[in-house]
Image (cartoon, rainbow, N blue to C red; front, side):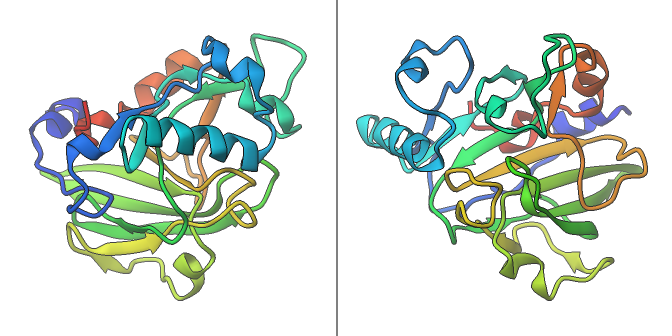
Length: 225
């Protein structure tokens, strides 16, 4: 069985509180093709948060979500991603974002073990990050949770275990989460390539084929559409 087949068959718990129903979610387009974004300063976490909150209010939603394999301009504000070559500029998002308030609790969708964690402090990076390891039917894979609160990693230990549906973290605000509007970056990773506490969540056009194969669609676990 492949990881793709496994993820299609497994029953996962929500990563946000189960009291938030599917009708409380609204899709959000932050791609460079969204012309509405041309009128706002997406380099400002405050202004982008206002835009996202307005989008949620317009649709009577609690959570805005989206972004898997989405080409975005918002990373141009950071030298960590920016590149003059369009083939090697990192601007394609590899996870799925859930935009909701800071301090929102985050839960593991499956039984898990803490693989690693780290505070990734580059401008535009994840901030506090947790990577969980899962082993189901002898298939090992990982889920990454970025833009968390500092408290989420304060007393965490590598090898610590969590049961499906157990709280693992809370979301951070712009002062600690890489300077973004509060949100969860959720990513499925097949092979961590020896990396701990971090993994690319944004890739270039040149590397997209590899990362699309190694970072499967988070919808396989989140089932929001």
